[in-house]
Image 1 (cartoon, one colour):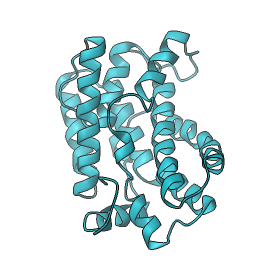
Image 2 (cartoon, one colour):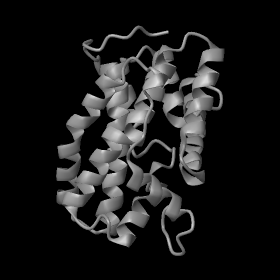
Image 3 (cartoon, one colour):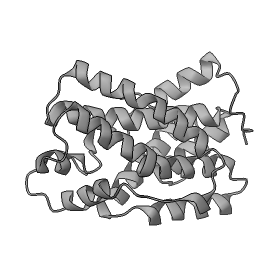
Image 4 (tube, one colour):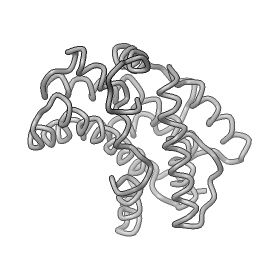
Length: 223
């Protein structure tokens, strides 16, 4: 397993591997999930770049962004398969609704499949953040960099939803991503111990939006 080195310098090879994992070209289907944002936009709760920025920031700091980072870190530090299985079960149980569970399960399964087919590393069947944390450990990739880029990809996906549905222009969307990017590093660092006892979720509007999306009549995204 890789050792945790928060201040370690990421090598070019490590950086390129992470870039490939979190690239839109990686076939995990991230583009098809809005994490409930589609409902929030339809309801008028997110209506412009400013409210989109706040929505994404809250999810990173107080919602799925934070909890996923905890699960990723815990999986990275897991020293045996039994511990990893327990982390995976906790991650699935922490999903606040059917679509949120679907989102982490399907992306996790796709990531595990790609990792095995491309790199020859068999991960099993894991929820998405658990799969990423476990893979990063097996590959010897830096934990903080992995978590930061995982969160940045997540935030970028949500910003892309906003660009298409609000809509806001691509330039404005890039400004939103730029503004929330520092939060990705902050959350990656604060959750680095991977302590499941610190799990919490207070992004209640985002959770409600995800639940409401399950019965939304007209929709584009799976979640």
